[in-house]
Length: 205
View: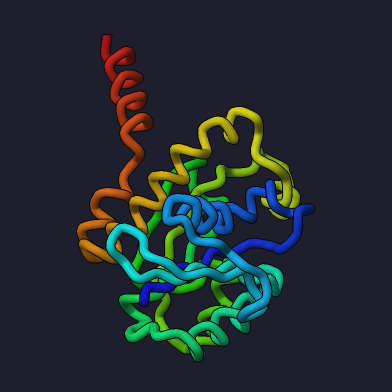
């Protein structure tokens, strides 16, 4: 079984926050796969099903972001996740990446993200992760306030296609391997790349 863990804070108060985009990626996979995410098991919303040919578990810890490791460790103790290096992936927000950009990695440090840090400590394992860019706070804006605020209306309109691309990146990592998936999905999304090329062309003229 592959296990995808989305990080966020539980409850409707937090749902639209930038910090909860990991939950929204998992919800997008669940909607595509027809998986019901039920509360209770593993102190989380959890569900299983088939998705793009994969046997999949989806987990959204209900323990609050910084205590996510307890929920993940409970799930791993009970589920047939054979190889943590290949079969577990955690997705969460990153305020150091432009909105919608993805960073897929097979292992690494927590990068200052407390939710990931708690999972690394609880599992004692190198954990694959997908960082989802939520944009950078404006100069002088408090980072905590920024991540605990909602996306702008324009960002919400664009979010669906970025969530879809995140789902594609996760599927590719599991099916094609992290190397090939990283080479595709860690690059700028096509629309961003085209806009950048157009801007360079205009400058050259």
